[in-house]
Image (tube, rainbow, N blue to C red; front, side, top):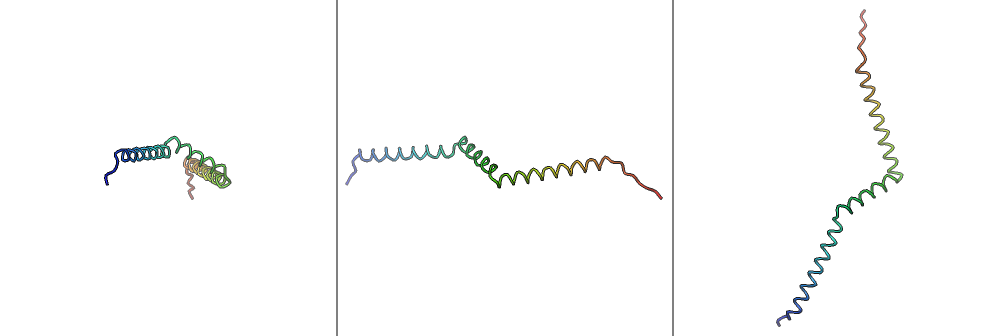
Length: 86
């Protein structure tokens, strides 16, 4: 039995609306501005947690030790080598 053209048009319109809603949803989920804001919020939450504070403290300590080692190496390189003769 042949389908009514109005029924077919209604189905096409419904599919078009559904596709438009899906595309809008995907555009919202993939929005760079929204993703950036979510990423920043996640980083801030982590850094404010005890684990984040410990990680940043450890990183700060490691950086301090590296800088101190570099300073010692530079000072040692500038010292003249004193050779003792017998």
